Length: 295
Image 1 (cartoon, rainbow, N blue to C red):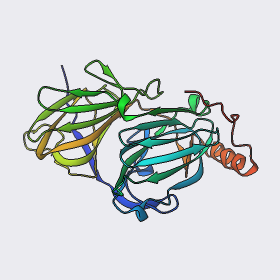
Image 2: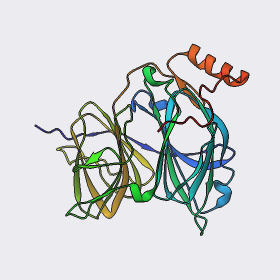
Image 3: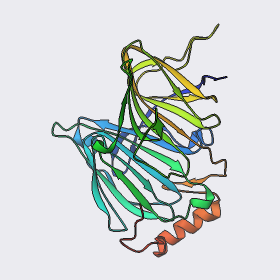
Image 4: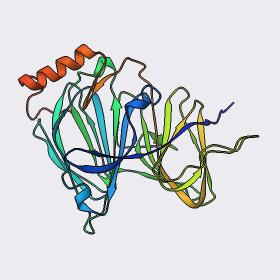
């Protein structure tokens, strides 16, 4: 028998500043570990004013995690310690596995009218994979399949599978699903989820009831820039409001390991963190040779 997930918690994103002076909205961060395990952090960066984002995210290290960038408008130019460089454009996604360590930069550029909008998600790696070789999966908009249902619902499948359609990002340790879902006004969409996995939604536009109505309890009806954290179950049910709803729907297999986190590095123990920063200071942080990225 199917069990519909109920909403466990609703969070409103909070304005903050990151990088060299990028104004963004932080959907969640370390306060939600382990509630959102394996996900660590999510930022929503969007503005029509280049002064809010143009200084970008200059060179910085990562180890022990994966960083996932998804763009709606504008683009991000990136480069790294392996000699890779490129541009993440509107509709594209980059899934970067930092693994044993990488140093990179991400510099945003707006669309012709100046608009910039994108998201960065951090996902944890289990201890057995924290020191894996760094790699990228760079996906352009044309590679992302769109599933269109008879009721008008459309789903961009970035990672995972919907109705037999698989997303282009593959072979990720935490078995994630990353969907960009749009529901017309008043329409209900039911989506299957893996029981025992962490599931959350982040609302981009409109609003909706993110759980079915229950006796004695009104359903959660959050609006834009809000995180909906679900309890367990094997499906979610969302009914769009009068303006429809667009949201990111994510799920992943919990790691259930200790988390030691400082800045851009996430390990399992404080000793591993200390080693990582010591290596960064003495020049032994990188465990790969230039030009050895494996995808």
